[in-house]
Image 1 (tube, rainbow, N blue to C red):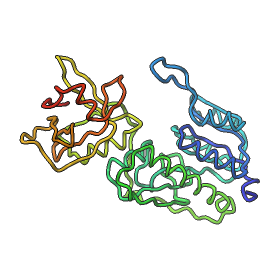
Image 2: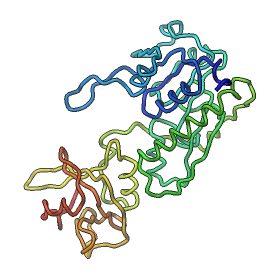
Image 3: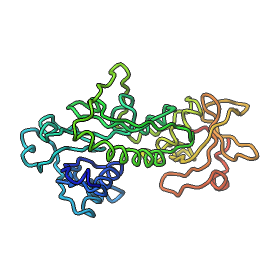
Image 4: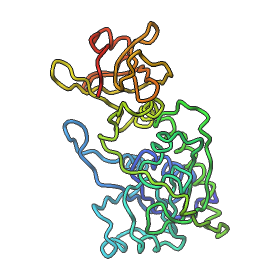
Length: 319
């Protein structure tokens, strides 16, 4: 606790992942000069103006909050509180170089991947989508490029559980990241860490996810689609369409597995069943066994209950 008490930090963050870092800093006695987070944004069907998770946490913790619309290099540096170091976690905007260089100990970023793999805004989802054998958390010394700075510390997390969903893996990496940050800060402040440049030849990139990314292409393999279901569990969700009585109905698939079994006709998107599995869809390779599903705007239900209410989906072609 004492080794952190003399560290004055300006924290940049927005999402739930960042909340874990902020709470760890406060718990371990760090002095927070302030929190910089994204502006409140409309959310939900009623577009209610909603604060980001980090703002909610900062209010609860009694930390001063700044929510600039834009980080203009010439406009904001001198409006920022003075601090020994900047700590960044899932902020969502590029921080100008002049701001990063203001504190005497620079700026550290906590990123939920093993950089340089999966730079960008969706590293956890991309690790799941690609079936990575391991992931982890990296702390880097920031520069003005996206997730580009030299590596200060990292921790690997083997993906031994092949059933990880995004929320499960997110929470694990948030805990790992918070622990790594608290362990690394005093050593970094003492000047005892020499950052290691990232290997640019190994860099891969994730992108901002949109609703359309969740649309299933049934020509893909069932393994790839099952990974989508787990990766997009929170957003954008995994969905397909079913043409019913001349209208296109959107179906959300929230839980699934895959099987090497195929129906007699292997047309991608064909819905079939067997005795123990009430809702199966043929894919480009193998089949997807649907376990939890729901029509848009309706509650999710198990496959058996869905088929009881929509018996005519058997034999339909989705998508």
